[in-house]
Image (cartoon, rainbow, N blue to C red; front, side, top):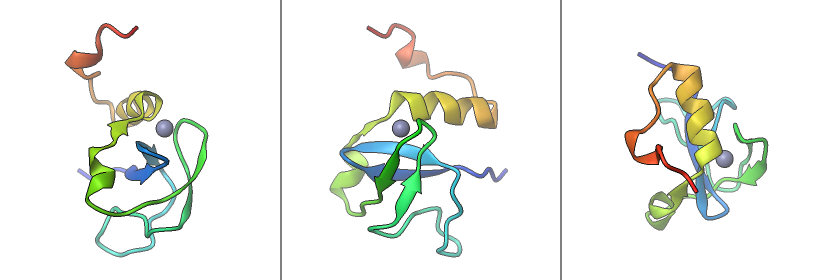
Length: 80
Ligand SMILES: [Zn+2]
């Protein structure tokens, strides 16, 4: 099932966004595109292998899961 959310690596974290993705067939924002994230930031998208090793923004993760109706990740039950 498709959903409107795409992940965008930016500013050393992986954020989620519902901005339209211009590249057909790829849920990836082109490098340098400014994107509004689910946690309320405006970030400039990055591309590249290392970007995918960045941590996942917890606010975006929560919002994205709410939007698609997914259960919370079991490994983030105890947050400090
Ligand atoms: Zn975020």
